[in-house]
Image 1 (cartoon, rainbow, N blue to C red):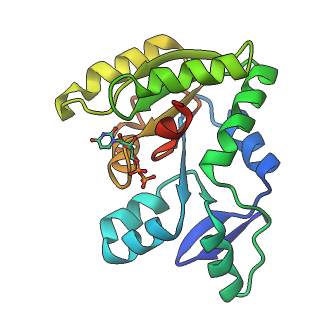
Image 2: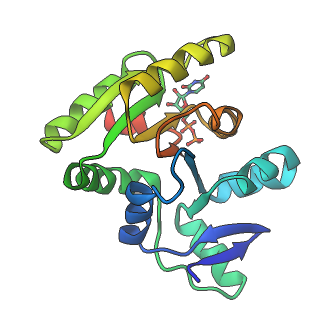
Length: 196
Ligand code: UDP
């Protein structure tokens, strides 16, 4: 079994390669978007003070452990975490795997222009990478239907949502039934990091 219980949450105990494989392969449930969150010490703290957020985390299809703080927490609980599955290190691996497996991405979130800049930078770095669209994360809430339509019409396989916790997690769970992509990830400040 490649998962363990940390702070009441079922966290995957995977190497980076296994995590990437899970994300770019999660097609086991046709017509059901697999929701992926990354949890770090910050989200654990938030989940303890905010039971709604705890519930949201526990509703994901996969939780990956992000950061060395999680490794320490696991160690304290008597487990050895196999890898640091943080999203920042993982994105280039996801991009490489997407090129190999012919999977496409969509970037939703961050300030206007940032997701597109990150997409351009990654497409330069990974020839053949298909990013089917980008959308910024400062839209009015009632705009979600339009954004979902644009995500679905783009035909992307994997959606990355970057609006910070807990907004991004809530957005994904609220809309999971309307999304048509195979996998959707909440990725925090990732587009800022890769926008250059
Ligand atoms: N963000 C957004 N919409 C908002 C608020 C924040 O798209 O209404 C973006 C923000 O521009 C940044 C990301 O969400 O790119 C949050 O990054 P942060 O590092 O704060 O998130 P964390 O990784 O700590 O959850």
